[in-house]
Image (cartoon, rainbow, N blue to C red):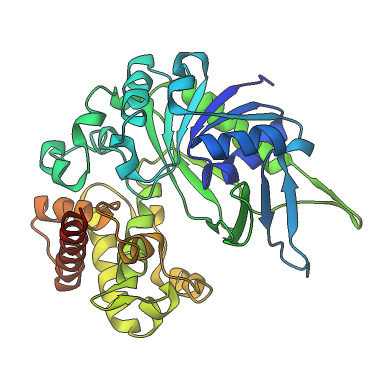
Length: 358
């Protein structure tokens, strides 16, 4: 088996995928803020994962895994030195100083690039036949940042596992709250697919030593030929994550879904229909019943809602992206229209507050 050098932008959520990759003995470099990089370089990172049938969660210490992890700032890495690149930051961050320049260098390197965002990168949307990607640009914070990418080198990995940084811990600690699988679509370049298939096998084969013996861990990497499988996350985002946003603040994802189950089902099924309209099959997607059962365990507001409450001027606009895709197919749903309008209002209020404060 080959040993790969893998670059991941984003040390928070990125450390979850990194912890799984390290089981295969690969070298992972995380791009993050200076304080985070210093801590990871001196102490590694910890990922805590609940395991079914065990009262205590498992803690993965990167220093004790077969691979090697390091961290650096955006200006300190050359993407051409890597075999695979993961994008695990929030979409608005890719337009920020330093990261924007690194993203351009990644595009020019043509290294296979796997997004682990809720928001599919614009080059990935260009891989979907029959969509006018130019009409999708308003959903992106800095759409021009994606212009240099060859769509064949970009794929999407659905970030279905849920994780948080416990506020009482150091920033190199990640707590997994929903240990589901990463679902990644194939590249249009075979080099990247070879790497993904190897990583999938290694993660499947990995076992962790405990006092009771070697155990299998949750959170796998699942490779799919269909480019639509990761888009199953869209329905979940619209029925749950973005409905955590209210005029008065936030609510949990569980409340967003289960406080009005029929409305949740209606918007969820609509988004599945949107996915089918652009080429997905129903087999690519996740049923509402399965999602609703998982949402019963989501006891925190989604990150987009928390960001709005914290005064963010920009958040990932997967809601607007789905709206714009639906419009290209002549489709519309009142709940989706309300979500987009509400997020627009909340962002505008946050921007005005920042201007007033300045």
